[in-house]
Amino acid sequence: MLHVAKKFQLSLFCNFRRFHNTSESFERLINSGVLSINEEVKYALAEQHPVVALESTIITHGLPYPDNVKCAMDVENEIRQKGAVPATIAILNGVIRAGLSIEEMETLGNIAKSNPIKTSRRDFPYVISNKSNGGTTVSGTLIVANKIGIPIFATGGIGGVHREGETTFDISADLIELGKSQVAVVSSGVKSILDIPKTLEYLETQGVFVATYGATKDFPAFYSRKSGCQAPYSIPNATEAARIISSTRNMNLQSGMLFAVPVPEEYALNDEEIQKVIERALEEARKNDIRGKQITPFLLRNIWEMTHGKSLHTNIALIKNNAKVAASIAVEIGKLEKTSKSSSGTGSRIDRQKDDISNYAD
Image (cartoon, rainbow, N blue to C red):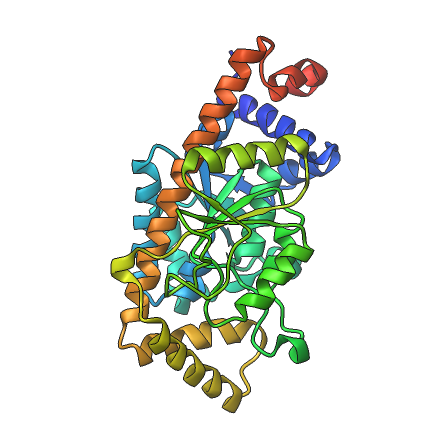
C-alpha cells in the first residue's frame, strides 16, 4: 500500500493529467514549494474522500475581526458535519495553502498585522514573490481548487458585472475564471450590489452552467431570495447536482458551474429595503471615487452600517447554508464515483492511469 504522501502525489498527478493533459505544470506546482496542502486535506484527496474548497477573502476582506475568524471556523464545521473535508485556500508568507489550521486562520484574520492582499489571478505572482499574505477571491480560489482536483467550492456570492459596467468595464475576474475552471461553485447567486441581469448574460457567454438549487428558477440576490431574474435550470437536490458535475467533468468541458442557493427565508432581507440601502452605498462610493479592489469591501461595510448589522447576520447565515449544500453535493459526487468504479469492473479513470505513471510513484 502506498504511503499517504506518495499516494496523494500520485492521486493528484492523475487528477491533474486527467483534466489538463500535462504533467509539467503539476510537477512544477508540487516541487516549487509554492503550494502547501495540510494533512487533513491531503489525506482526503489521496483517499478520494469528499472535499469542499473555501475562499479566504471572507476572512481578509469580507467580515470584521473577530467575526471573520469565527465564521470561517463555523463554516468548516458545517462541512465536516455533512461528511466532507473543508479546504480553506489562502496565501501565507508567499505560500498557497489548501487547508488552514485555527492558528493560521487567526493570523490571517487579524488583518491589522497580516496586511493581506486581495488575491485574484493577476495578484498571485506579486503576493508569492514578495512572501506576502493573501485572501483568495472566488477566482483565485477557483484556480487553486481546479489545479489540485477539488470539484466543488462554497462561497457567499460571486462577483460579477458592476452597475454601470457598460461604461466602466468593471467586470469581476470571477466570471472569466468560472468560464475556464472545471469547478462547481455553490453561492447565493451574485452579490446584490452588482448588475445581476448583465452578470447572467456574461456567464452565458462564458459557457458557465447556471442553475438555482431548489424548486424554482428564481435567481437569488444574495441578501434576498429573488432578484427578478430566472436561471436557465433549477436543480432539486444534491444527487442531481452531483450528476451534472460528474457529467461536466467526464466530458472535460473545461468550464465551471454555478449553483445558486437562496438565503434561508428567516434570514432574508426585504428586497425593496435592501435595494434602497445599496443605492445609498453606491452613491457614497461614487462621491468618494472608490474603485477597483476597494469597491466591494467599501459597499459591504456601508451596507452593514446602514442595516445596523442585519446584513452581516444574513451574510453569515447564507455562507453557512451554502457550505452545507456544497458538502452534501460533494458526498454525492463521491458516491457516484464509487458506483462508477464498481460497475466498470476496471476501476476509475484515475486508477487506470496508475500503470502509466508507475515510474513517477517510485
